[in-house]
Length: 227
Image 1 (cartoon, rainbow, N blue to C red):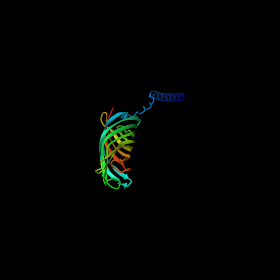
Image 2 (image 1 turned 30 degrees about the vertical axis):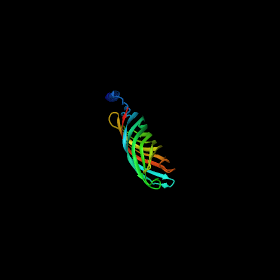
Image 3 (image 1 turned 90 degrees about the horizontal axis):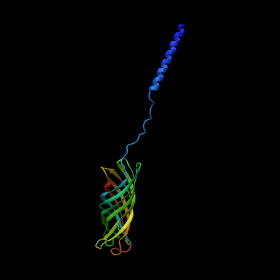
Image 4 (image 1 turned 180 degrees about the vertical axis):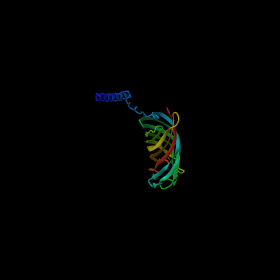
């Protein structure tokens, strides 16, 4: 009899422990999935902008004629002007179209067989570009590459023989970094290599068949206002 009573007590105790464990499990909240992480919204580069730019250029020019060439001589000077453009942002990639028009004082002189009177000067009085841009946005910082059309004048001035000017279309390519400053303002610094090709000196001041080429490296800074 005692054995049956003892066995019953042990069984009852086991059932009590099992029930308490199940009750504890039922009272425990089910684990919930962690919320999906949503990164904070960064700076949005999409939209129109306009601004100013200024800097300097250095490069080379060469005169060539039926009697020979001047050799490439140095040209340099400053430039300042205005900029306008539009950006489209897709995730971190920023596509843009930008144009600018600058007053220029890039010039230089040299001599040699290509110069009709022994000395010649090349000048550039204005320079404009229309370029595509592709950048990668690190929030408020955007490095970019750029390239497209360049248009400007090539002014040829043989010493003491007057001058002639021709508008030429060429190409430009480069890159830069644009940074969002405060409010709608952004600042940038960029490098462009620009080649306007060859301009004809003109029979009025040069022997027939005299050509003048122009290419320059430009480093400039800009300040833009985003609308």
